[in-house]
Image (cartoon, rainbow, N blue to C red; front, side, top):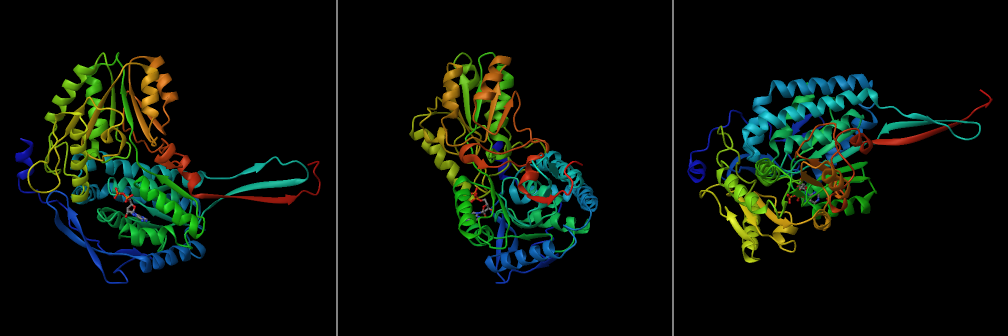
Length: 499
Ligand code: ADP
């Protein structure tokens, strides 16, 4: 059924591509070089549109616009309440255009329309409103210094923020980055991922309709080693925020350090454990573990990609996980009832299939999937490996695809040790009815998020980020504000300290 579905004629998206140029200083403009690049429909590999290809000259123009908007423009100077209102109007506009925004996201990325429209666009609006609410609630403090000094600690915007986002959640990453930066009064140059440039241009236009002054948000489409590297190493950028792979995170951190030591926050890869204890309701555990890894075609930095299952429930768990994967509906992400669309592009598609081969070669048991779906686009069968061993590549490296790797364990101490034996530390899942097991595991696991009896809960108020090589710093919640504020101490003598 899955293969037939993917072979159908692609459904025509209910949206037109309106914006393909760079957004610099409030205007849509061509790249300085005049170059463009194609953005592809992952369902077919065909071109959706050609998009202006920004490189270092365009980054220069965008940073200059952001600099001017910060140094001379109204944005950091207007009342915090007025900034709040621009962001609130933006959230309203996103909701008004929700259908087009979601369709564009599905078209460019391949994620299901149900997910884009039902979850992600509402989360984007929610995130923007959350940070809108912070705009006029950021304030400093007075330090109780010894001696005759009055000490004010001011929280000021950092300045020009450079932001680089990935292709797996283009709009949500836009909101996580732009929301706190703008609420704090910064100006922004955002570089989108080359695979998914469309939705950010669309909503950035809405943000201007909401009253954002020119130059405050500049959006440059383009490639990593050109536009992304130019932004990371730019002397006029005061802060860099990056979401992507760990290897690229190391590159941008180095570029930032070698240029002007701009502070960097990084949200990177993961190999997150999902731990099923022996007291778990197996049917529920199977479903949650399945969602934890297969959500968004498996293209999540926090995917629960190492499924650790207690030996007492292991055989039943594997059988049921296999059945669940075989039932997963793969097909055109615009079609109702489809759970899994295509992978983002040919590169990821090939990489995932290489990992599948490596799983087979290393002796893991392939219990479901393992092949492509159909002969067009980048669809992959929901794949399950059982009897995996910790040292196998499929249990160590980030696959970023619909591949579940099931490992057997027999005790809490053991699973803690094995779950933590990874350079990553982004997230973890724990499934149990025991409060003691939940408490022990959630404290022992070295990860930025531990989801207990749930997974992938991304509320705007919850901080998100990694331990170890999964990242530096936190996004969302009040923690993201720290990334976009400078701290200034103002010290004045007091004439009469008695008062
Ligand atoms: P992936 O391998 O999944 O595409 P990347 O980490 O390479 O993940 O991509 C995330 C973002 O980082 C994208 O916007 C990409 O263009 C950008 N990027 C890639 N290489 C570099 C680089 N050398 N410097 C700056 N940004 C980069």
